[in-house]
Image 1 (tube, rainbow, N blue to C red):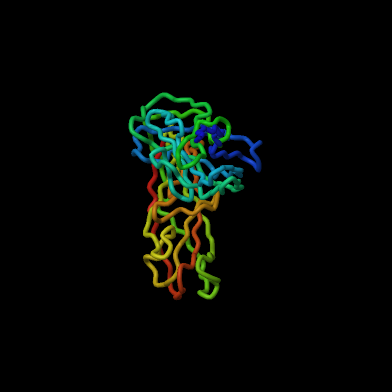
Image 2: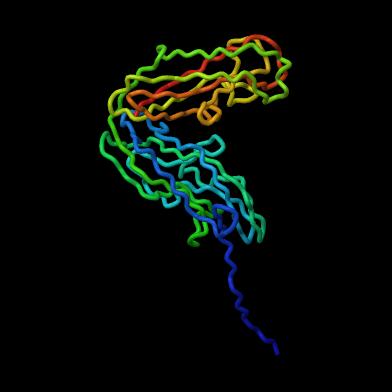
Length: 310
């Protein structure tokens, strides 16, 4: 006699979980407060970075039962932050928004295992269509991103890390500022020897400069500096030696406040500065960087700075 039977087994949960800290007892939320004077000018181009947060750094503990990569999901609830404003993040020098879908963090959780790691990113607000010329919008614990698996946002509560923001976004018609030295700045780097470059990627002779914007119109709260130039063929985030005779050397441009590279190839090339007392200052630096075999000679490059005011 043949006996047939059904065996019921519990379904295992395969949901990916990520907490801040070093265990599943860590927090699943972090809230960042927006600056008080965050303004969006109606007359600036769509796609302009309105505000960029300082670099955020979090430690993470993630678990998973089937083995999976961890992804950023920007704007996980698909909520509009404000008319004319889009939320995004900068990760590894690239800007991502909700339309980017699954963004690989580089963290992999092995089968039935766990992973400890650190993530660094910046939060950005980006101008989109439909920004009004007046008024304000306040958000409270607005979700910037959730960390989850490739399948998207799971429904398991309190196991996935969420970055939140709280604050007020103000809208203005726009205005202008005056740049010192008629907008022409020069950084003179000292002479160095070709033999001083230890290896490809080594840098020498970092020198600093402050870009000043003054006499800003009343109502202008932020100045956005956008940098561009000719990328180096060996390392495109560096500015090519386009006007000199030396070979194997390029120029690294960066912001003094955080030391972060300003990419010649439009990578992380925007800096937003608060206007205080109708003026704003941005500190930058330039330095030689070896990109290949060094041939002695002169080094000269040109960097274009476009400014937007909000």
